[in-house]
Length: 387
Image (cartoon, rainbow, N blue to C red):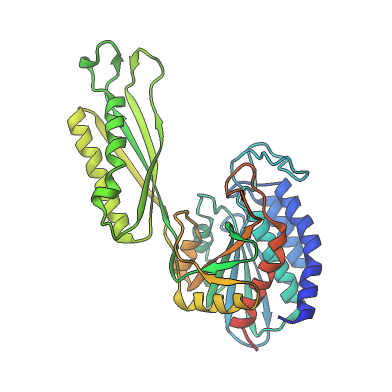
């Protein structure tokens, strides 16, 4: 990247920090990103970009075409906040109790907006860039909603890329890998039903709490005993709800949890085994069990060629490395990678010791990496759409 570009990008950072902190102070949950989307659309329109709103409800896409090539690239940033109460005490902390940009999507939006500004000014590429601002990444499948709304039919992309800030990596480090990089996310909810009764007379009713306890124990051995040691998976029970009094056996108990996998065959095996375990415990305990199993996000699987392109582009921007392992966290960008070749990239934002993780009430995006993120976006575009 030319030194003049570095100065121009550095000059963009200060106003983008203000933009980012304004979004941070005014967070919006999934499919409620009306203010955020409006501010983004206004900024992109001022650049002369063609802006399309209302895609996947609150998503938007801005397109920038330069030259005559029919080559295309998509760059995606997520916009939504989390239902968490912020505890940072920052001057720009959330003004909306219980809503918080605890995953850095405010930073993602700002980096992509900065890239759009720089590319609109320099125009050193031949083809079309689609800047994709996506709603509802946090568990509500905004990527799928945009795809179902015709995202890739209306805005075809040869490649699509997305970044996520990563506190586990030093600030400025860029990391990605071929194949799985983020896990599929499944949610299970099992309703355990007895009849309910007096706690002093347990012989008169199936004990839903005892059955649920046995169920949790068996579920926690499912991965180690039903899945090959050569495969990788996580099953965690995260909620048990039932009972309202010390002397009453409840009629029902609810057991909820998550499963994370990278391989569809392993995913199938776990769901099948979970259902069989629930059936077995129900028979043994005299209860009835209803299993609701929801595969809400697929694994995020990077295309090998797109990863190679990303690492070459990143090498001219910062320290770039191949990630040794995927993460068990999930990301709905997996839907986009099912529809289009591309790659998901981690951008380090670690400040040093005791870095605060994503989804923590004291988390805040590291503004020091805004310039690195902009440069990486630009490098991806100028490599894929080279003159």
